[in-house]
Length: 125
Length: 246
Image 1 (cartoon, rainbow over the protein chains, first blue to last red):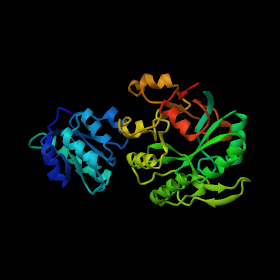
Image 2 (tube, each protein chain N blue to C red):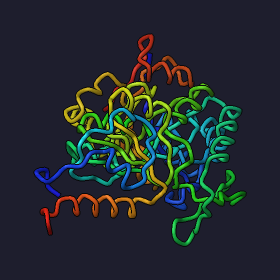
Image 3 (cartoon, rainbow over the protein chains, first blue to last red):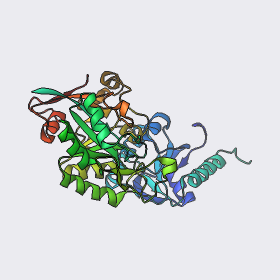
Image 4 (tube, rainbow over the protein chains, first blue to last red):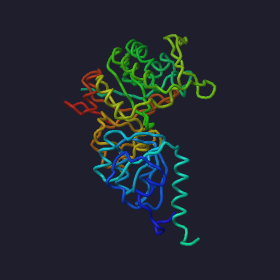
């Protein structure tokens, strides 16, 4: 995936992947071009970037600080995990939605990759 | 005011990774050889050697802080210490309630045995102690403080199982009484990497799993005498008490 490719709105991802919106509902118009998958927040801090969706099982409020610092488009929690109360509050305050899926990390990452990749195919191909 | 040598992170044979020679009696013996005044017993997710360690320490002139190295849901390792056996027992109930029910395989992970003062096995932890408990760091910190205990994120410099590796940074409101660094780094080297943490009290400990490692790193605590409340005051830098890393 590459930043210059077509970008998709978070709201489109929510619709196509059947995601729940745990918090930050008014901020689904951010654009996404790629993703990052990790549960080590120090790793996300070092390697994720602006406009990515972050898939994780961490629910601690520090995820929002890092999402905000790295200007991520959204966070997806896997396996029906719920954000901690202060994580949800921080998501609203930072304007970065926390989404959710019942899928496991591997499966949601695969689906996300596929959607973004297909979106990036040249028109008419 | 006197300086006391403290090694506050020791694993006994109860930790699956703890050497079989780490019985409470052998730990106390080695700590005496190493001129340790204050020793912290911190097995993974279990406090069950605490009361015996406290008693053996007392008989041998070593003040023992009893607690556990708890693994949070985020896989952050945290040192926790409690003043007396009653608080320790209440904390053990909490650990028993939230430990993941996954049986230990001693062949693979190591034995998790409780021994008496002569090294005879009297009990065994059935669930694997190196997994996490089903509680986040915030909940653990609150539980520890509600019981009047001390909460110290362990080896924060490490690239795994540290609050920094797992959570990216130390949350401002976590209420850490101190931060521990491992023996592989100095405080000044650590603060060069993380200057914003300079306000914390730092301790350094051996994280010993083998007798030879006990006392390989330690902290000097400036106290009026050895007691739980004096140690707390040293961590909180109150009334002239404090911690110096040698």
